[in-house]
Length: 168
Image (cartoon, rainbow, N blue to C red; front, side, top):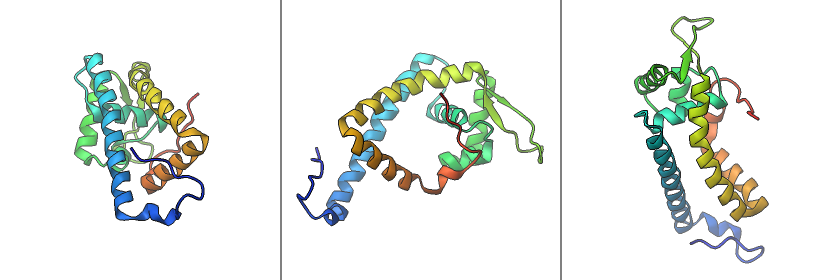
């Protein structure tokens, strides 16, 4: 386990050494595995035969209602074909409704149905619990620093699609 940086304990530039960066990558991969394990458990309990990409799409649709295939592809790195298939599966399951595009009939914005909102929430609740526990461990300063790091890693994807909506 990596010890937190102590105030004045070491030159902060040392965190950019290859070993420290590799350690950070390892922790990101292990954290990702823990999050996906929680998603997999929740999806299995749903019994709908849906996978990670389906929940990811539902989560992003809750946060950015109206995204379509192209935006979903950009946000998730799914191919356009895979993003289209994912939205079609969610539509078939009654979790998503597709509208018609205002300017282009081929661009069909998608929104969650009430059933889709409930589906997404059941999995997200598990992840929020994990994240809240981790944030409590990191403390207030750790939360702000973590959010800055993750935002930097997410890069321009943050600006894809309709403006994020804050859900109460």
